[in-house]
Image (tube, rainbow, N blue to C red; front, side, top):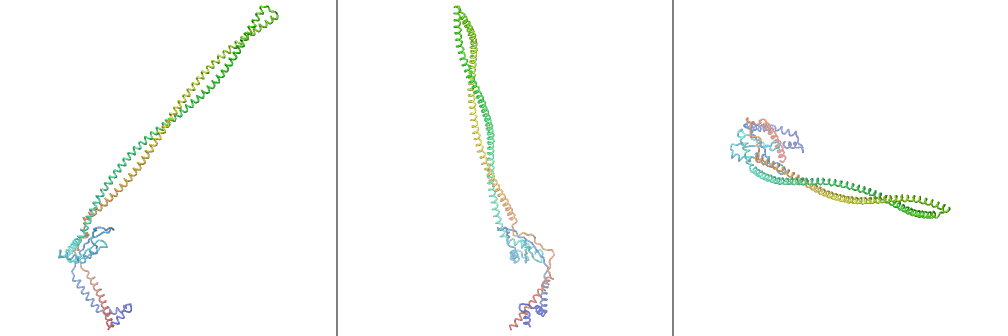
Length: 489
């Protein structure tokens, strides 16, 4: 029967559930007896256990340091601490120091954090609280070496940070001295620049004066040129007057020469007429003395008429001679006057030439002054250009100094930031040194005033279900084994 049931139960790779339930139903009495015995024992155990006090405390692993990646480093991992508490590694020490202490601790991590909840079930509330407190103290003692190492490391870091702060302050002081030196240098350069600007202003004022003097000289040269033109015009007028006077003198001299010649001819004619008149008068007297004849009387009459005519002609010629003499005297006087006027004109012309020479000499002096003025202005322009170049160089120096000062300021700010960060790290290390311990007690050990009873019905139900499953498995295993034994026999 057992072999056939085992063979029917396992049909190839499939299990026949109907056959399974038939086998279990056939062994129902045995299964019920086993369940009854196991459940009874569990009930006995549950009901004889006294009520207990559940003591609990929550501790938090404190951060001892950080690695290079910034991950917090604790005194130990939570798993190791749970293992130490659960394995009873601290029990011997605690039993030696506290004989009445209850042992049986349990540690649970709270929600994947650095919090650890320690629990202990004890029949006495005070014993449970004291036991949990002593366990925490034992944990402190257990990790005291690591804490001291961490303390030593923090002290070394503190010393290093203090040295860094001192070095940073020294470097900053050096930077501040350099910055002060640069500021003083910039002030000196700016003062020099101010002096150069004043010099440039003076140069500009001098250039303005030179330009004004140039305009004045150019105005004087224009006046001199105008004076030269006026004098030359006057000279031309004098030359014109002289030419006219020369023409007048030449004309007067020619007229005087003609008058003189006419006067000579008249005098010659007058002498001839006088001689003729004297001859005729002498002949007439001779005729009168000789008792002239009728023909001689007629001739005498004719001589008398001729003498009268000659005398009348002599009077006319004398009058004309006097008139020519008067005109000749007047012409000569006019020629003398014209010559005097011509001499005066020549003197005036010489004076104008001297005046032109003096004006031209003054113009040359003004041109020399103008050239000197241009040279002075050119020299001032060169000096001004040199001063401008010096100013540009000073501006470049100031810009470089300010850039260097700005860089020093940035470096000083970096030192300040570094000092601030270092001070913050130092304060943090000091705070960590003050609070350095492996654990921080978040919740002190405590237990409820009323005891806690075990969940009896739950435990009985679990015992019943467990015994039922165990009995069924035993029955099935027994059936299979019996089938194999019969088959082999």
